[in-house]
Length: 318
Image 1: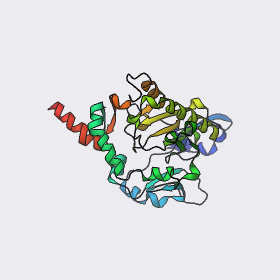
Image 2: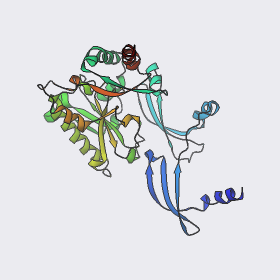
Image 3: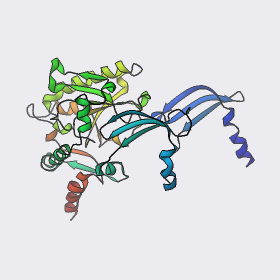
Image 4: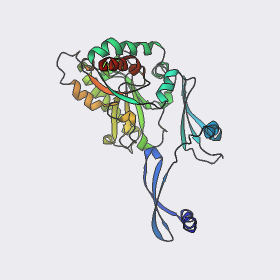
């Protein structure tokens, strides 16, 4: 007990010299300083959120200084403080979906994941009709709000009219709603194309390679212009498959952003690698990603797993 008490007196004696490192999107820091004129190193990491039901019931009531960063359709995002008091600095990034749908609940629920292989025939006959249905259900209203100038216009970092003003090549660049807008090592932007006939990377063709290279170059230039502390080789560009929403968009993140499942193999497809894959494809300019098999990760609650791949697995094992 005496040793424990003696140890607890050390932290208040710490005198800061400088910040050594900040990672995990600002959730962990390493500080160099001294205690009693001897060098000391202090690391701090935010504790895990409570999972006890009683603690969760009052979690939202313990927040203070809630500041709205933006609102678009059913999506809202905020900065907030975990403790009470007007002077507490914001230490939480909040996203609110209201009203949420059953698909949102599935997406954010804990679930197992599976590796699946989607052939061109499966995409054409089963997956693309599923994607078309999702688009028909109005799940892209928030995207169209941005593209049509109704929401988030002050947040747009860059608009590109396309090569020589080609309207079907236009796109915009804006912060992803999950970024806190200040921690550069956790930078996360979205480049969203204006045309509506390209739903996912499956719609990309050889004829799009020049456009993809143009977007890559413009995205990198716009990002380092907006955030001069970042260099081009500190930026990673990738697309998801299956994506969260079926309208072509490119994720733009700092290479130091803490890797998560959304950046893992089987979910994230690097833009550069997609270009390399499209260029040598046999066939004419219409040959593309719809003509190749793709292996990727699906959550067990995803409709494509329950409706397509699980029944196929059951049939194969039967």
